[in-house]
Structure formats: structure tokens, C-alpha cells
Image (cartoon, rainbow, N blue to C red):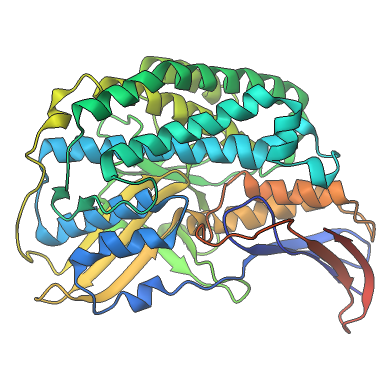
Length: 474
């Protein structure tokens, strides 16, 4: 009779989730599912609020990437007002988003994922974490913490605080970059570049020692989606949508984010609170696509800055067409950190960021507005419908983690099929399956955290409810 292995909770991700692995009578994995087990109600309880309040409300969705929701929400407000924001405001929003990319990617690479591939899959679980990394390589761990701090400093310099800054508003932003703030950022740049180079050195060695993981950790054909500029350059807070397939061919290009619903459908599954978006022309589930760093590098033709462009050329050689291994999300994050640093350096020489012309003013000129921006984990959509008084009638949020939902399910199934045989459940196996989720750096509810050690209990349960085998840790 078929059995079910449950990994609950999945650790070293933002939020709470579990994984079910279904084993057939022969002891082989038949399928696997990633379940998000926490419910968020922002789309409903924001109804009736004035749209101008949304940049203050929606960052509370997430404690790790509040900036992403802040900026997407403000852009939705721009669309409702039908305004072009002042150039200085656009550049300032971009600067904050670059800081967000740096801090979030540094957290994912150094704190959440590096303990696996630097310390080793078989390292005892109590040491396979950031504290174990500190004990093994104190300087690298400290540099990773400092790099994340640098990104957070940019957010604080612009928005007044590192988490939930009330800074971007419909029509622009509240305050410019100051000369003092610019110098504070400038002083960080040499250290940030040096840390990023050290991370590349570590990653190059990792690719040599983890060839198996490159092949089996979420390595499958899919579509990829991200924002690009008119000439196909990497985008993070503007541009239009591009879809490519696993061969690298463009199948949809320059799609206006305001009309995302013409190419993206949404489905729900009873096994998770997380929605499952899909590429509408191919239907569900054939329209599976990935977003985030791996996808953005697959859809972009160039990064637009020299050092990151050189790394992109190396990255593209890792695939036949598109780069399809989800293990390479880690490499893509490092390339995006480097690109973000290069763009930040350019902004430091732009005096327009000191301008006080920061906000366009208008009334309700459209009853629907969509804000799209690239969050660290992928493209984020805020879709608001309002009445003539600007009160929200409907809110739809499409987050990056949801768009990767189908891919994450396929990834854990692929890893489990490679490692799971019969009733034996060694702990390092559980960690490999979990790491398939960490590749995507999912953000389920980043404002929710657990204190102390994360326990885990895995049971093999027969259809009649009998517990066949149980393994616990913590």
C-alpha cells in the first residue's frame, strides 16, 4: 500500500510550510507536494480602504521584503492616478529596490543556503546553520552579514528605517537622498564589492564539488518570466514582461504589466494556501513557469553593467538554451548582487537623486491600476480596483513564491525520486529535499518567525492511518 512521508516544518525559509512525499508499493517516489500551511488575508481585509493607504499597509505582508510590496503598491497607485512620476522619484525607488535585492539575496545565500553546500549535507543538523558557518569560516560569515547590512542601510537612508519604511507613495516618494546619505553609501562600496567577489570564489568551488546537485535539484524544462527593458536589458523596477521557454526562445515579449491577466492565469490547489499561477496560453499545469533570479537572467539579453555582463556570459554557458537547474538560483543571486552594486555606484554620481521634485499629484483617473516590480524572489504584482472615491473594491496580489509553486513541487519530487527508496529516511535526505525549496528562497510569511531550534517529525503513514516508521529531530 502507498505511503506518505511528511517533512514538517521546512526549515531555513521565510515562513511555515511542509512537504509530503508519496511512496508507492515498490518503495519508489510517485509524487511530492509542497504545502504552505499559513493563511494570509491581506487581499480581503484591504477592501474598503483608500488606495493611498496601501503602501503603508502591504509592506506588513513581509518582514524580509517589505520594500518589494511598498514599491509595487505605490506603482499601482501611480496607475490609478494615471501619472508619470518625476524622474528623481523613479531613480530613488530604483535605488531602494537595489538595496532590497542586495540585502535579501545576501540573506538567502550566506545565511539560509550556504550551510548546506559549504558545511556539507551530512553535517549534523545542530551545526548545519549560520552558526556552524561562523564556526567554520568566521570571516566569510561576517562578510555575508555585513553585505546584508549594507542593503538595509540603503533602505534606512532613504526610507527612515530598515523595515516597513513609509516612504514611497502614489505619485512618487516622500524624501530625496541627502548628501550625507550618499557619502554613507559610497563608503560601503569597496567592502560590498569585495564580499561579492569572495562569494563568487566560494560558488565557483561549489559548482565543481556539486555536479550531481546541478543535475537533479530542480533541473527540468519550463518557461521563465521576468521584466526587461525595450532592448532586453535586465530590469528590476520597470520595463515589460517577457516569457522564454527552456530552449531560450522568446514566446511572449513586451507585455504591458497592466495587462498581465492576458498571459497569466491563477489556479488553487486544496493542498496549499499558496496560489499556482501559470502561463495562460498553455493552460494549467502545462503553463508552468519560473520567476526570480534564475528566470530574470534567462530572459535578459544583458545586465547593462560590465562586471555583471561578464558573469552573465559565464552563466548562459551552463545551459543548452535556457539555464534550467534550480540549484543555479544561488549563482544567479550573486550575479544580481553584483549588478545591483554596479547600478548603485552609478546612482551615487547622479545629482538628480538629491532633487526635491519628487511627487506628482492627481485624483482618480483610472478605476484599476496594476503595480509590477521585481522583488528579490521574482515578479510581484499588485492589482487594485477602486470606486470613484478611491476606495478599494478588489485587491489581487500575485507574489513570486506563488508563481514558483508548480516548479517547487516538481523540484522536491525530482530530488525525492533520486534519494528516497523504501522506508529508510536518513536525516541528510530530508535536508536535500528541503534544499530544493531553499533554491527558490520562498517567502511565505516573512514576518512570522520561530524562536529556538526548529523541530521536525517525519512519519511514514499507511492509508489506514497506521504509523509505519517515525523519525524525529530537535
